[in-house]
Length: 190
Image (cartoon, rainbow, N blue to C red; front, side, top):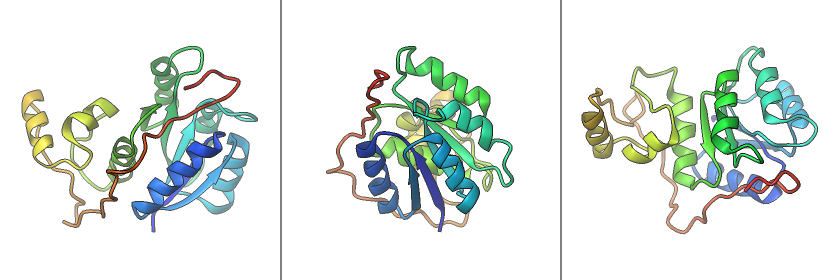
């Protein structure tokens, strides 16, 4: 089973991310700060690390720096509401340091699951993958007809969103899922 390590100091958001990811079939571990998350990764490993940028003890940028030297290196998705400097600036820094994808808070479950799938499958497929959440939203989180339409409009090839073996991961029923929002008290992140 694919293991995802979630690092976020917001207890409510961390719990919501766990429910969403476990509902999609992932094994989930979590940590309330970056230092605890890095220790957990070193002790138990993970296929993907979902890391908030603004956390106590060790922030997400420090986590990305620390984990990019690990062997095996986990795939990294950074998330932030931006704090005081704006989410796009801080997430660009995270990408420059080694995060394969970024998510701007608040985001909905389909954005999260689309980003996780894209990053996890990036090394087992030659499909063109979107580089930002806006592209995932435009093509839909699983490819399909929306992907063909989006790729056609951008002049790109279409590869679909199915797993290379022809099987699709189970889709959770997210019609009733609340919007996932991050709060980082004391840092002004929303």
